Length: 189
Image 1: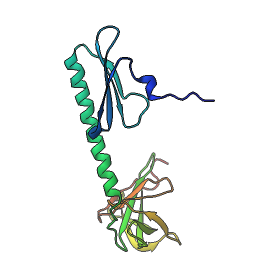
Image 2: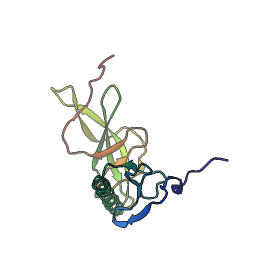
Image 3: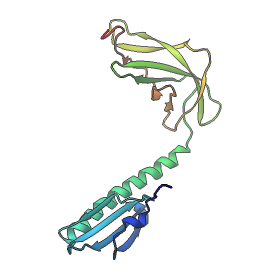
């Protein structure tokens, strides 16, 4: 049987608890056996403390707690805003072009075209061809309606019009029509 850590194991003895709802945090203040002020700070439902320190003075402890709470508040607000926007539909339209830039030793660019929009949160995309910009062997542009794959794939499109490409190429963003850098063919071989 595995040993399970609990938050209670990390709470200092003889500490006072302060729950800070707007930061989604709990602070435990105490005096250490060496007489120095200490604090253990937990965010969310975490078992282990984010911070657990002794301080030279009470003022230093309080300043550290305030910095921690400011960060927790900012993180909590960011997560709340992100959660709220997740419910917003994407604004992609049919024939919108998306691109992804990927690669390890070289940069590759793939383009996709929206061919269907079955719901407010999903689109169907198909991979399309690209061509090198004349006179610039390092940039490519999309070739709309020149499809490379036979079938489209249904993907979730976020409110910021990004989609996750499931074949290891990361995310695809809406293309602004500008040429995208790509490592020239045969580079490094």
